[in-house]
Amino acid sequence: MSSATMKSFLKGVRHGSPFLLVAAPFSMLFGVVATDAGLDIAQVMAFTTLVIAGAAQFAAVQLMIDDAGVAMVLLGALAVNVRMAMYSAALVPHLGAAPLWKRAMVAYLLFDQTYTVSQNEYDAFPQNSTAQKFAYFIGSATLMVPTWIGMAYVGAVIGASIPPEYALDFALPITFLAMMGPALRTIAHVAAALVSIVVALLLSGLPSGAGLLIAAVLAMMTGAFVETRMEKRAKPDQVETDTEVPS
Image: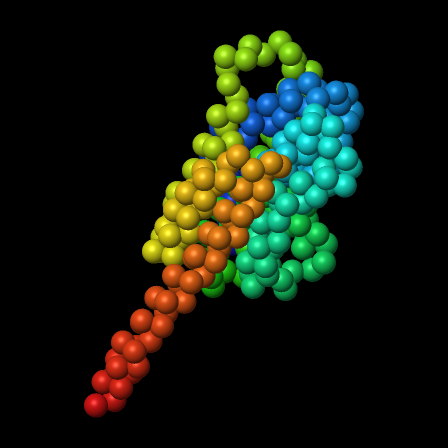
C-alpha cells in the first residue's frame, strides 16, 4: 500500500469514527429488540453479521413481531434498503474500475454512513485514484463494522436488563440528521428533503411503512424536477457567457 493510499485509509477511519457515537447504541438496541422478538443470540448475530442493514433489520424484526409472512418480511426489508441501489449507482464512477473482490467488499460494507462520508470525499477530491478511493471507503467502515456487530451482541446478551427510560431508539433519527444535514447543499436537495418530511408525516398512518416509501419517491421526483429546472435556467446564461468570451 502506497503512502497516499494509506493516508486515504486513515482519513476514512477518522471521518467514520464520529458515527460510532450513534451506531453503538443503535446496534445494541437491535440486539435488544431482536431477542425480544424471539430470536436467540446465534440468530441475532447471524442476522447482524450477514446483513449490516440498520433500519432494514429493524423493519424485518418488526414485521416478524407482527407475524407477517416470510415474503412480506423480505419485501419490507428490501423496500427499506432500496436506497442501497442508488448508493451503488452513485459509487460506480469512483469504484467501478476496482477489481471484483474489492467491489464485493464495498457491496458488503455499503451502508448509510460509509456511503455518505465516501461520497462527500469523492466530490471534494475527484482526482484521487481508484485505489485511494477504495482505501478511504474501507477506512470509513473499519471501526463501524466491529462496533456494530459487537454492540448487537451486547444488546442480545443484556437485552431485558436495560431500563426502558434509556430510550436508545434516539440513535436512528440522530444518525440520519448528522448524515443528511451537511449534504443539503443545493435548492434541489432542500426541496427534496422538505417534500419527504411533509409527505412522510401526512402518510404516517399507512401500514408497513408505505408512507415512507411514497415520500421517498416523491422527494426524488421533486429533487430531479428542481434540478432540471435550475439547469435549464442556467443554460441561457452559460450560452451568453460563452458567446461573450471570444469577442
